[in-house]
Image (spheres, rainbow, N blue to C red):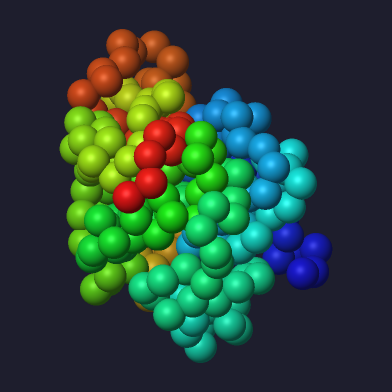
Length: 240
């Protein structure tokens, strides 16, 4: 990966000052990254990243091994940093293979969550831990493969039914910044096809909106009922 590709990935998933200017989703990505960084030290040993994409959070995990898993498609083979491909049904690993699992912003794209979580349960060792993140207040994306939004209560109920216990449950961007993120999402969707309009809108509207949202988040009360993402740390308590 070249320098500019590395810089773009960094500013996409862990944006700094440059990302404030060029990343319409600066607040959302920054908020998710901070919550991920807080819980990442809880995972150790052999880690499986389910739906790994480009492994944007790999640097957060100090583990013995890091394996990226993706569905076998032409696009995934061309553009993503994948170690193992699978058919979308059964993970190609033996039972109890991994000490830890990461599943970041994937569950909303799974039409059969019970079967998917059963596979996570199967390959995770007894007592093993997993981090799962999933959006709550977010627009439809990666259409048509966007199937669900989970409240904190719905996610907890689903995971407990599938053999896990909740160790820690966090919410990202639980304040008025949600509104600025959704506004930027609207503007991005409406301008993404028009390069010069998108650049103009990003610099002249979305960048100031990022700044305004960051200030608003510091001076207004939080609201745990309206937030962008669920971030949960779970432990496997039984086989299914």
